[in-house]
Length: 535
Image (cartoon, rainbow, N blue to C red; front, side, top):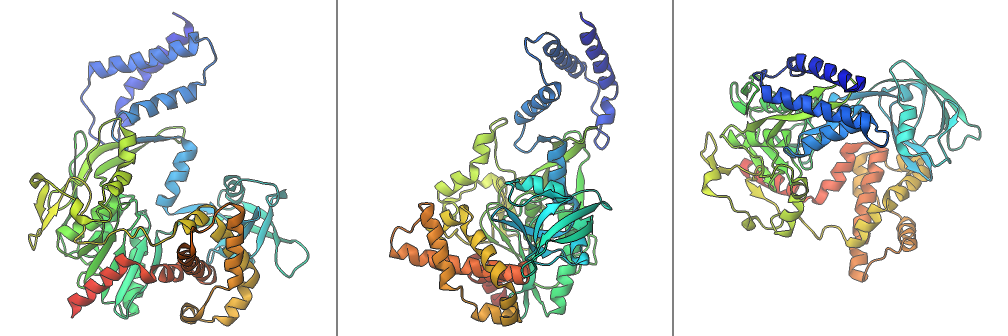
């Protein structure tokens, strides 16, 4: 036996001796000779490959591939991420990152600032919407075909470090120089919070992060000051996040000690999450909007509101993720997110949809299969066995488990809302590029002409020259409407989305969604239902 294999065996013994330390927040499993024997076998295999295999082997990649291989044989949500992937994954959930604080997009291989983050480091030194960042620390980033990830890497950096930026500003001949001291930049969960009627408020948020609860509370307070009596929570396409965040948000809507969710696992403590009392919105009516991409924490929140008969759920059956992952951090910054429990709604429903261990492909195609079977367009195509029948806790209404949250009011997917031609244009980035060029040229003129969003919403019309430009660019990419009917539909789609994009650049995401959602059938149904309850 070679010295290298001997070293591997010593390391194996060391690993087994700290086995308990790898699981600090779960119940330690009883010592199992078979597990220890198989761990030795695993390390022996690695040692043999590293020592005797005919070609050189990247040990780090070999171990990562092995971990991934093991996890893919488990449930669909246990996963491994390397250090870089872990950092990228964690940023939206931690609620901040270190950087210069600008929203930007790429136009003709140049970074154009959409908006500086309010009170952020870039705004403090005078960087404006429309500015082009052409260099970072004397390295050109414009006109050099640098990819977006590399540009972001250069702009970001530890808090307190300085980014020396070269800025080109319209109307000024020389390149401007700004020294921006990087700082913590918030990553907001709330996309929009505004009044859809004089008495109905609307909040859309995209995940459940560390800061989401505080953001929701702030949004509710603002809407209440604007006259809100009833509330619509938009969880469409919200893929979830922290279970604790979902429990904290639900607690704002429920009376004290109401059950929100509970978890059950094999080697982790069973847990119950209950409302703490003193919620900020425990009286007004609530409607929750969901769709086939609402998952995890979104299903916890909507399930609690439904099971406790606190509000209504509107839309389409949710994704069906009822598994709880625990993050295990590795010393090199990588992470294993391992499924350790299942969660249950207050009525006892586990909403995890069925899956076969190791069959990731079928699981990933579930939404596509639901669409092909007609479920997203016809509620009558959904059938649950009696074994999955449950009842809400106060009104004893029938609800179902075993595959997502079924809404109280079904709204079918509108498959004709956007034309095929428009979808192809959008996929090629033609609208984003056209919007960037248009707002870059006319930003100041538009700000003077539309001093309020209401005025813009009521009277803005996209110039026909911009439409012609978009269709001309589409022609170059062999994209064209099939007939006059499709062209009319495509023009309508472009006008609406471009108007929303212009509103976003002149104001913010509230105004963007106020336009995008003007004819949204799920939102309109929720408004109708809440208004009818009032009457």
